[in-house]
Amino acid sequence: PQVTKNGQFAHWIHNSILVPTITIISLFVLALLFWVSFRYRKARNPVASKTSHNTLIEVVWTLAPVLILVFISLFSFRLLFAYHDMPSPDLTVKVTGNQWNWAYEYPDQGVAEYISNMLPEDEARARGVPYRLAATEPMVVPVGKTVQLVITASDVIHAVALPAFGLKTDAVPGRINTTWF
Image (cartoon, rainbow, N blue to C red):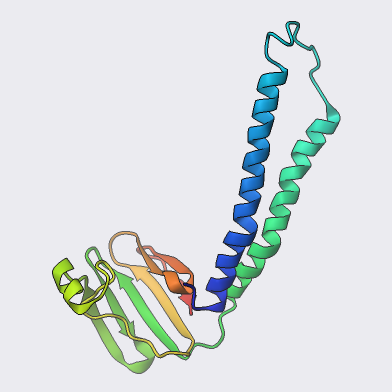
């Protein structure tokens, strides 16, 4: 479950806006396919029409997708601006993705970089932590504070994801990405 306002809003947009819109569009296209297949088959229509343009249909199939995208953008732009409108951070954590581990550094607190490796499956289960989410040195942040993540990678592209916060940001070598929660 989402635990942040932005994550909850993103979840709401997905479930209340995107899924119904996609479902309606898919059912409409399916109905059109069946109608065209039945109505314009060779047995019912032995002489093909020579009509090449229908201005009304062309205007509708141009405007309908534009209106759908504008409708979706009203919600998604609000979410996008909310994610990029970071309040003053209480803590900054530099996250560096390495080939087989993550490195964390707390520059504001003077905490030097430390390496966090993934725990083996049996050790993760012994600790009661889901495998692939268990780490030798997990990143620790204060509860209820604004945390800024400064994200990069040293060798290959990685992704920093906090699913319960609705966050996923790429760690790209030579590039600095930031996010917050």
